[in-house]
Length: 212
Image 1 (cartoon, rainbow, N blue to C red):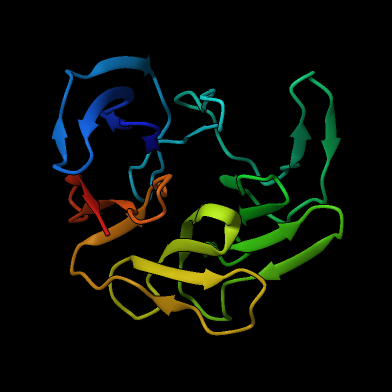
Image 2 (cartoon, one colour):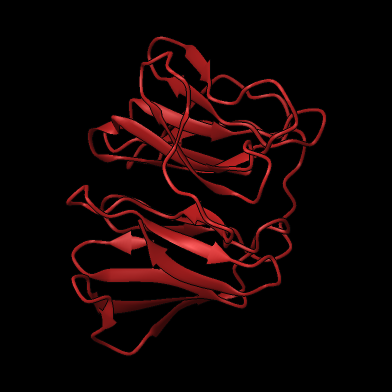
C-alpha cells in the first residue's frame, strides 16, 4: 500500500513492514521497519487485512479473527461516535471509503460463496452493484483520486484475477485495464493519479509488487 510521499507498507508472512522508495526508479531508499506482527490475511489470496486512513492511521485484523455471517457496518468519527450504515447480507471482509467519505466500496460474500462488489452512497442510501450475475469473483476495490474510478481485481474473463475499472456514476460496462497471466490485485492509487501499485502472484504463495 502506497503512503505519501514515498512509503510502501507491505506484508511478509504475518507481519507488516514499511520502507521508503524512489518512486521514479522503484528503488528502495531505506531498510524496512516492522509495523506490526500477527496480522490476519485472506485465505483465498494471502493478502493482509489492513487499511491506512488519509491521516496515516493503520488499522488491521489480528490473526485468528473470523469473519462471521452476522456483520454490521458502522461509520466511526474521530471523536469516537458511530453511526450504523445499512446492513449488507453475508460476510463483509472489506469496506473501502473514497477520499471524501461519500462513497463506500463494499465487498460482501453472497450466498453462493462468490465475492461481489457494491458501491454504497452515504446520505442517499443508494447501492450500486458493480458485479454481474454469474460465478465470477470480484474483489480488492481501490478508489482513484476524486473517486472517478473504482479499480478492482476480477476473473470475469475466465482466467486468473486481473485489474478492471468501473466509472463512478456510470452504467457503462466494466473495462479491463490490465492483461496478465499472473494473479493481479490493485493495492492503492498514487497521489499523483498516474500510478497504480499492484500485487502480482503465481497462486503458489509467491507475491511480488508491480505497477500499472
